[in-house]
Length: 148
Image (cartoon, rainbow, N blue to C red):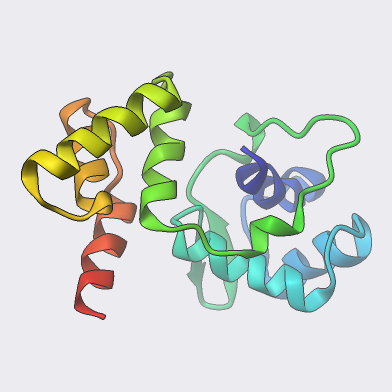
């Protein structure tokens, strides 16, 4: 939730559906004083990598409705957001967001991994897809990481 909230904040704060990357950085670093400019740029890169933002002609466009994101009063994102999450973490977050118990999901994913002798990421993607949860971004990332 906090990555989505941090990404949504500049758009909701300015009431815009797209922002120049420099406006996004200014909103997070100067307006809200959450990150340094370099960290705000890194956050944009992570959000693009996780499918929350798209870059088009120097603009950042959210792939979700920022108005639907919860930004609680006093919210300050943790610098942990600047660490890129693994494909497994992305899938797990999607599962939890869909109402699946985290411990149950991890246990069943581990069981799938052992039964099928696949990576944890592959097992997580399969688990999510069996529940009709779209994790295509994480699936593409997991596939790309196999080639690395």
